[in-house]
Length: 132
Image 1 (cartoon, helix red, strand yellow):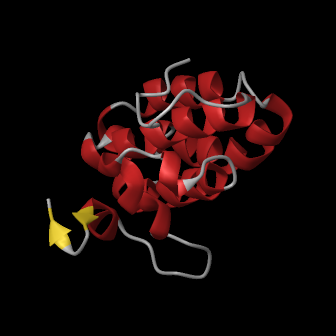
Image 2 (cartoon, rainbow, N blue to C red):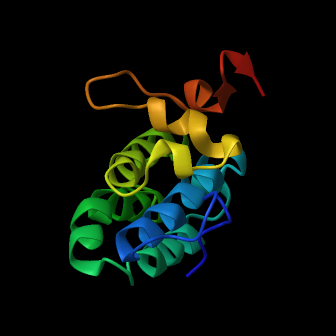
């Protein structure tokens, strides 16, 4: 279990700890091309995030895990899957962490890929309108 040091202060409960962990994985998907480069490891990491707040976390993160499984099995391209995985994870993160407790490096993700909003890796890579 690794929360990636993305929260300003220690998590106040298991749900927030899981949220910090999941937000770190969003960073891995976007900044490190995790879906393309290490989808198996990403699956293991997501499962580890859900060792806290497990029932709800597994339910919410399950679709991202399933998408990664399709990438591993070559049933879906990593390029198509990456934004979907990030979107599912961000939905779970927003329910667990408060924006003000997220470090600036990861805050911009919280306003992106909101349900009903278009989502792409390119959009996720942009910080405050500036491309990284």
